Image (cartoon, rainbow, N blue to C red; front, side):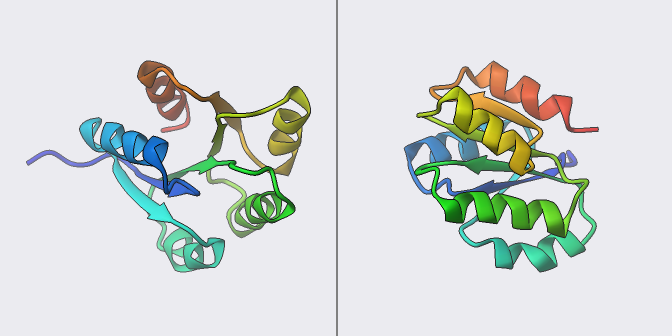
Length: 122
């Protein structure tokens, strides 16, 4: 029996891109978990599992930045990778300042996504 690697928490991934990423993660033996609301994360982050967050910015709204900051406050050590199909340099800098450790552009090359995840799979 194979052991799955860490849990990858997917936030704001309720579209075709999210489904595609979910399928890739399962194929790479990660355990993907879709979350719509940061408050739901509290018991998940408290469980002490090996986790990584993949956060898709869709609108670059204040609520998305606030959710990212809340997650960072709840668990300063968890790696947060951000992704978005539309982004400016200014948005990228703001995302990193809000707590993401890296950014993956969309459309993405699956191997670039895998390398980014492996980089933080400590």
